[in-house]
Image (tube, rainbow, N blue to C red; front, side, top):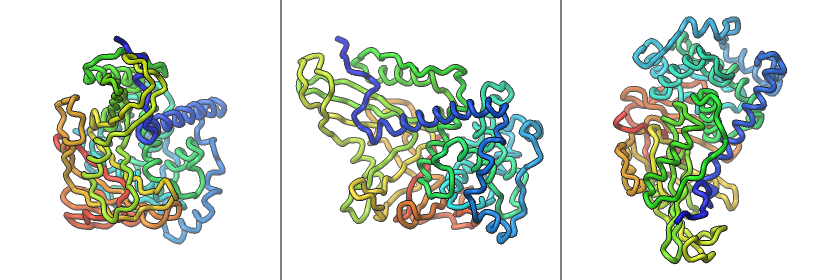
Length: 432
């Protein structure tokens, strides 16, 4: 018996819809960019020419710091790619230098949230190797416009050519491009670094999508008692529209199980780019693994819009959200903002440099991937909401380093694993 239940809907707004909203915004911004590119004869440099006016202190900061501008102003992107073609992981000439780079990034006026995200991605070897391989391939095919990918490529080239010769570089070109595309990041207001990270990864996903003519249409997945097969069908449908190295590395999947009082079960699935974990008020200390266990085993009562196809009643149904599939690069973001009063929760969180998530995965999926992960980066936030400061800890080799705008310094082989400043954690699957 086939239920009327929409296999793609979810009642959990916090975990099921926020990524879909970001994807929609990014696609709208990409479409706006295409229109502007045509209007200005594909010259992206003409868009938002008054960008630096919003950074009133930029020139003062620039001169005071004695910064030697290394931005590639007179070099075309064609020339850059000609000089550094097909930079694959096996070619350690750039990947090795970038992932061991101790080059800082200048703060252009409350852009610490951008710098923090960029440094983590720059030092993530699986991401960098795939980005270089894919962006070169897409550039040669000239499939579509890719302003963000091109600007990020130029930033990598600056770091590669710098080779730790100077302490920091100016990321102005990249910041100008992405704030021109996403107007809500425009100006010198503080923003959420994890929100920015979601937008940036989705930008890469849009620009480097291997599906040349993606469709927004989603087909109805036939009901099947085999939930694992339904997830496979859902994944295949998603990949028929968006298939990039971002989906390969960062995208995981939630499963939602809805049980009627009569015993009939329905299933739903959704993608996630990071695992958002809500920090409940009233606790003085949190344990990361325990929070994950509590979140993804919790039952809740929901009201469904449609009658049960078996008993035809509109009774309440029990919802259980689980992790159906984990990505290769796992991002866990702590929701420190109290939704009731908008204040930040500064309680310390215990975490580990290695974590096993076997207990939070849906056992019915039974995939062959390891659930063990190793920590390689941490995002930190100090201060209050909208007025604080972001910086990151990144593991390079056997040591941790702090990246705080233009300041980069060595911490040592270990970091504090109980922190009130931790904001997001970046793990890589241990068998990579």
